[in-house]
Image 1: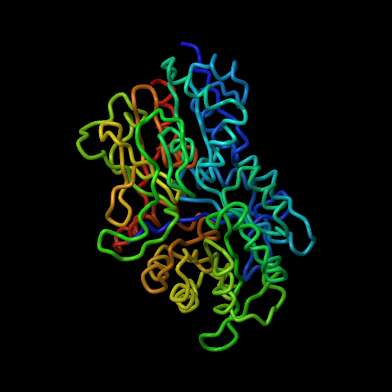
Image 2: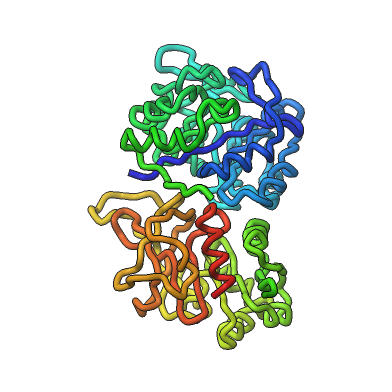
Length: 256
Length: 215
């Protein structure tokens, strides 16, 4: 089995690190860079930056934040929010990002997935999906940070996105996001059974044991966590220990 | 002791910000440059790169930097190739037909096997954290950039092709992918190559860069 990646997710609004519940009711947490450094030093395998209001205002303020992080953070960084074109992706990669995550613009214009994958490789193109449950074992794709319905079935859309060249899927459960109630394991499993690319489970991690469930039952390849780290309800070393005790292989980390 | 000065070769391939910052973090004075004189007067040289082999080689040649890199090696200046930069050190690559490389380490660049040792399909590219193990027949990493890193430490890989040195003595470290050995670090005298990205491999990666600066 491959090593499960532990990813620190940083939702950004303007210059601030923020956190909401179900992607709403945003609270300012603090400086993105201070938190990025803390998670890097704790041994996060990757960082994930999402500009969560970029789609709404049609802009992206992340370049500068990523460029700052790249000064001191030496693990891969994925950046998303408001990416509309290959040029937007190019800009963020130049700022030090390793991958870009695209949601709204990919729904509006699916060929953007192929364009980014052809230009930079599939490993660079992360399809970000915001999923809301609409019936038992049925989920609808949302855009604009969980505000806009698309009518697209999540499973159909993820299959199409991967066929177009997405090399990874960031799967956020809008229902669970920020609730600390654990991941939507059925959603994650439904997606991992359909696609061969890595799937990052996001939304709902309230305690380290939630990770064990979504990896073992949902077969997530990576787990994104925000609230649990921002509010220091667990440190990455605790989470890593719980994962290892459950037989999940994670990267060993020697503190500096 | 003065800070080591490092030339990072800029031949229009990929983002060099993280490589520069990684080296600076390790105490180097870094010049990102395509100028032959600046490269030849540096005490260390890094050849980075991502993308396709033939394109990388063409971009080096277009700037006359293929002969400069060979001259760096001839002079015995420590040279580190990263990712595509490592693959370019070999004689040739099978990516999109046979294309010649710099020929500093004998061998060929071949595809990462798309099936595991058991014959099951496996994902290509090989992406993610994987652990370093000594190459077959090696009992230590003395005198290489891995000297301060123990076997079993994980580093970050993103690649579809891999170096296959003709002489097993030039294999320093491997990783296992689908039960098969994938060359992770190669070396011949002062010329080294890392398939993984030390600048994206956390503290282990920085330890490797730091050791290269002292090689």
